[in-house]
Length: 245
Image 1 (cartoon, rainbow, N blue to C red):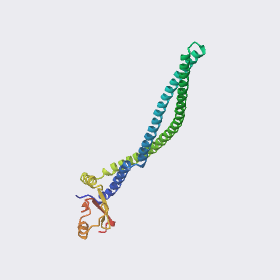
Image 2 (tube, helix red, strand yellow):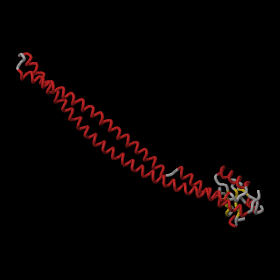
Image 3 (cartoon, rainbow, N blue to C red):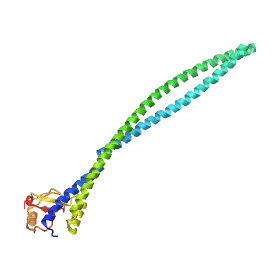
Image 4 (tube, one colour):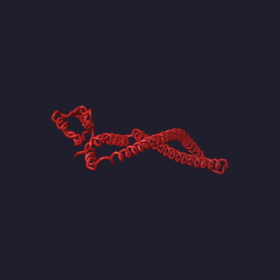
């Protein structure tokens, strides 16, 4: 393939643009801002689960409180009924003894239930404090996530601008290359990552391998418009005064 040296030299500009596009693509894949968003999403999920767990506990405690209050009310009604019968004086001696015994049992039962109710209400109060704390933690995580998403979106927008600029520069450059040269360049770049590089001080700028004397002799004898390639990596070698030929 024969191409004017000035056109071959522009391959270095194209390679520089493509290298920048590769860096942009790589940064998109390993974006620290996105990794932070992912971390905070996990943190938000963990804190949300914690808040839900406390809410479930509170619901269970509220149910227990209602049950205990109902049982206490039922015992009090039985106490009131028995006291009413005692105060009326309309019961015999045997029934009187039974009522007094039952009242004693009811009073003990009510005290046990009231103690249980106090314990559950204390747990309910502690759970409410835990819920407030969990809610505050969740709010903090959501606020941090929103801020991280904003930073991520700003970085992505900057990358979009940079990519659009590179795409525009690439389109302008590729229009100046013969189709055969551009096809060879693109194929090389797709296969090995670098399509063209400067031959500098007898070293390939793509694979960084120094060429042996025989290869350097071959390249130096080639006409300036002959497209030469690195024997190691296949990259198109652009020759300049820095090539050491």
